[in-house]
Image (spheres, rainbow, N blue to C red):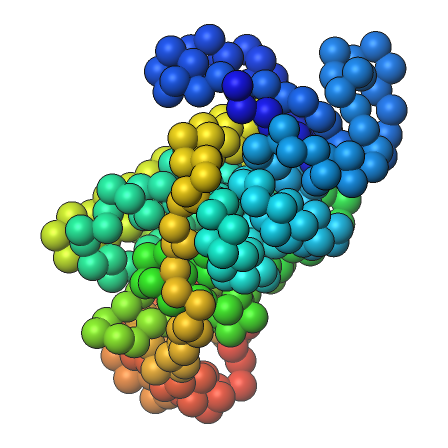
Amino acid sequence: MVQVAVLGYGTVGSGVVEVIETNHDSILAKAGVDLQVKYVLDLREFPGDPIEKKLVHDYDVIVNDPEVDIVVEVMGGTNPAYTFTKRALEAGKSVCTSNKELVARHGTELQQIAGEHHASYLFEASCGGGIPIIRPLRTSLTADVIDEITGILNGTTNYILSKMIDEGLEFEEVLRDAQQKGYAERNPEADVEGHDACRKIAILSSLAYGKCVDFTDIYTEGITRITSADIQYAKAMKKTIKLLAYSSRQENQVMAMVAPYLVDKNDPLYAVNGVFNAIFVHGNMLGDAMFYGQGAGKEATASAVVGDVIEEAQMLGKGVVASWSPEKQVLTDVSGTSKRFFVRVKGSAADSSAAEKAFGKIEVVDAGLAQEYGFVTECMTEAEYEDRASKMENVLGMLRIR
Ligand code: HSE
């Protein structure tokens, strides 16, 4: 029997207990692992709940119990999650988590500590919720050289953008509605400013390219500046708007960024709507692959966490090797990366000569909005775009085109 302690009895923690108990027999039959939840750590009381007798408030009970093999950290935040994880690994216990913030900040160090103690530190549920993406990158795709990852990695922003597009509403209005329905946090900053997607692409890029990508080095824009006017232009171009977390490697140069993009309807990411996530991966032998599914939610996330519990149980005493080297991956500056840009400007489409003067060949887009028009540039670098846009006085906004 493998004894498990769950840190945090919130949405994901209660889901983990449910998956282990509901699927106990099928896990045993398929994976040969007999899992049992021995403890649940939470500050709160849960009178009448089936876990009532397993509930502890003192972490020392768990970390000092030699019968506990695996600790599931689903508390969120970095503290005390970091300290608890470190102590468990140092005690030779394996840890798995859905905590993307902790993995992005301390994942390299925690994997090293796990290795030193023949334990594992796994985090499938930290990116893409229930979608298997970390394990495929860590195992199935190791024969490939991955050169691009593009993900819709944040369900909250994808829900907001999908609703803005479907109903023609403004960002603030949809955000309020999403908060009321529980799809967005009361403090939505990490999601809407792109920080959550940034941490996730840092984790995926570290895995894919083999060195530690520091999320604080990644250029990040959120969706707070997207307006219903942008949506109207997107529709006029038969495109949609998605918050994309992107990274690529060419030879040894890695770049990464998070920003809203215009996505064409022929693109596989176009149809990823609502709270769903998708991760598009390109490998030199694999070609294109896309991983799609529920990026959040109790059962889906818990399913991914318990998948890690099972792998750790199968590797007890040995540990799963670290997913990337502690060496820092230096990122190239996004200013040198090229793409086409969609630009909104004040004025009349009939008088686009100033835009042509600044940008050269352009395609004018008329979405029927009063006193403004849009245009699409030729492919150019971010630096070139900035330079050319600075020569115009009437720029209202810009979106990158995937
Ligand atoms: N806030 C995250 C999202 C939860 O909206 O995708 C899952 O990581």
